[in-house]
Amino acid sequence: MLFDADANTPRMLVGIGMDLAQVERYRFGPRELAWFARKVYTDEEMSYAMRKRNRAERLAGFFAAKEATRKAFGHAIPWRSVGVSHERSGKPVIRLYGEFANLMRRRGVSAIHVTITHTAAIAAAVVVLEAEGRV
Image 1 (cartoon, one colour):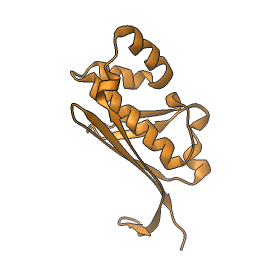
Image 2 (cartoon, rainbow, N blue to C red):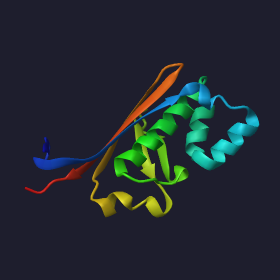
Image 3 (cartoon, rainbow, N blue to C red):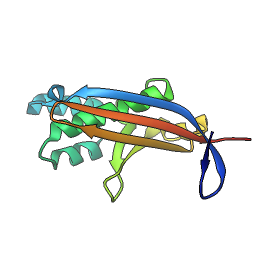
């Protein structure tokens, strides 16, 4: 059991997921990119990736984060119902949309932690689900 240092509130890890994605698989031509984007990525993710020089690395990282989130929750969540956003600092955050927007509340999850990293060849993401514990 972990404790929140500020509130001395016990915390529990209730889910963890990790995924790797080969960047080469996300180097799409225009037609393939449009099709894959409609199936997998949110508008925010696509806008972010298209502004970056190495967009395939970002797309692979987003895919890995989505899959890691699905693994942490223990079931498939539609691709476009889980998205990666960024805080002002650049820190990635997971957002849930549509009918899955209240999944955290339903599962008792108080926070989703995500980290994403990538090289020119591989992207990796780890997602940890946290809940307030009861003593």
